Length: 361
Image (cartoon, rainbow, N blue to C red; front, side, top):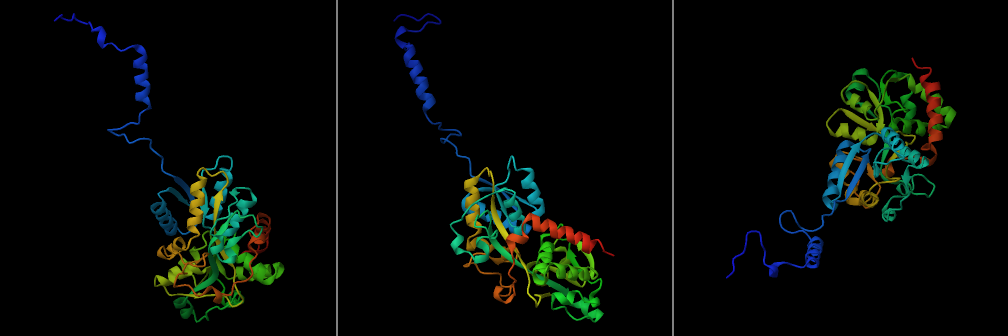
């Protein structure tokens, strides 16, 4: 048998060039297998959520939505004012997909500024009437997910030591007996306090309402930046009375503090916590999926687990047991579209700063 010389190859073992090229093309077209293989990898669906609800609820809802759907959620918790400012700053390059929570007037202002995407969820038929169209224009830029009513809370130990009767009405809060005994937030920084301002104007009319707010100002010892801060101060015994949303007062009462909650006899205003899709969302499918999910009864019942005691917007969802029946609260006909608009809000806040705080002590 003939020996091969070093470096030589039998001619019979050589493949024609065209076969080599074909083999390479076939190999490149085959899926990868083996170590680290497994075919084409799909990136998981994602969602960027701007949340204005209570932090614990934001975290719980994000985790549950991710667990149920597999959509990876990046959540940031901010107040309504902060979120609105962020949406405006990002309007040419949106980073967020959904804004959920926070007072409805913020969402309405975002809609006016063309920062939200219209969306009619298939769950609209499951919702209470007040949640279907908070804007009142039939455009469906935002949808109500929960509602919270205004109330005031008092520290019964404090009032007992001072021999003061418990307030029962908005009119009571302006009485000289409560001078320096009340805390509320600043309506320029707090959605809670702006709801107080809008409520008083709707109850009394604008001129009479501002005359009342001037009297009330004489009894206020501090305007806080946060809407829930006054009731925390009342729970610690740092003030007698706090004007807050009912759900914030219930949190302190349920924790064992000497807090009693009052729904004013004249009637009261309310907030609607909304869910909105951000215009230009990077993950629109995930955004629609989250809005549909948060409007569902099971998702809305998560609020009580996070100690967020608002009334759910889905008619089938159970309200937290610590809340009174919503029919007993005495809600006023609150014009969310008008008082949530940027123009009305700016005018009322300007008058409040000039007439109420301008004459402050």
